[in-house]
Image 1: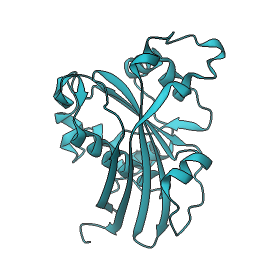
Image 2 (image 1 turned 30 degrees about the vertical axis):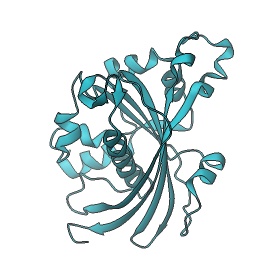
Image 3 (image 1 turned 180 degrees about the horizontal axis):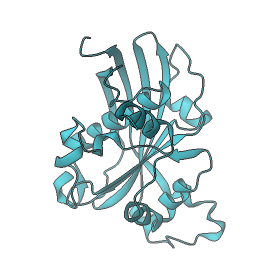
Length: 233
């Protein structure tokens, strides 16, 4: 199989999550629930594939003390996107996320204070998740050297609501709000189970129906992007 065909198949076909990573998230009731969602499937973690230009997530933030495990789930069916954005908070209450990302925060390498995620890391996580979201909804992928598409972050508006505990697991839900020509708008929520909720039974809630209700929004972000081919803005 030629490399271009292999890359295309990687993007189209569901990604086989390595068992050690899947097992890590299946041990948590909330992320296990995410992995079982019928409308979602795993997608290739491009930032962590060998040969990626994303050195930050491929190497710097890829160890036990930073972000050892990361899974991205995409919708199986892409939706039609509007050309004018609606406020992200409104979209999040009526539309399923385009992407759900499960992130294990390993240790002090991502902290700004004792057991607390650095605020700049929260912005970085949003930025990375948005890039994957846009590639998903627009059916592009960063490894396509013949038809490169570049998404440039023009604005990130992050609102911090509560501190994020480290070590711990966070769930990032992301939406593409609209696409108009080269302009793209996105919204995301970073969620984590609170310490009080963690003290409850973590793996066998009755029926599992309320497991997701134990997630609390720690930060939100609305962003504006420009799309271009190659390196030209």
